[in-house]
Length: 189
Ligand SMILES: [Zn+2]
Image 1 (cartoon, rainbow, N blue to C red):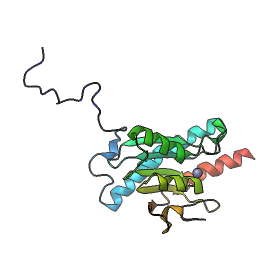
Image 2: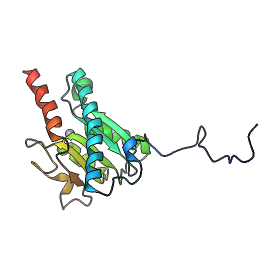
Image 3: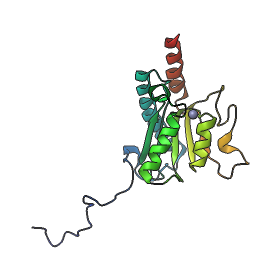
Image 4: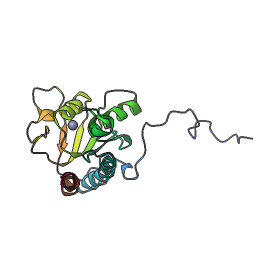
């Protein structure tokens, strides 16, 4: 028997749509946090998750690059790793796969207010996709002086000719992110 004082809406039951995505422990409260130090701590934690995802690419001989998307409330909406070799798809970059999964989670291609976290500065394709998805913020690990399109070779995400521009936070755990890729290429030789 159900007690009378329990409102039927008190707990979300099966079939009740809750907030989309997966709750992350450091995403409680204001996201991202107000202070520089607290923001930095959250970017470091999120980059750790992207780095972990990147290591899974090693199993398929793919360059270890990982990405994730968190929503405006800090919930995890999408995760991706480079799968170019695994599935033989030139567009299967970590960022594209993370953006696609985030859009599927939200049921919309508009990722307004979302943050994309990626271990390596996005290429031209991924920078374009980030802009088209209306992502608010890009948090990147290592810069890519050879093919980066977020400040290194090009700056597609902040090009003034583009109606939507993305805030860039660069160099988060850049040594770890860069070392992972460097070690991969050293073992390939
Ligand atoms: Zn890319």
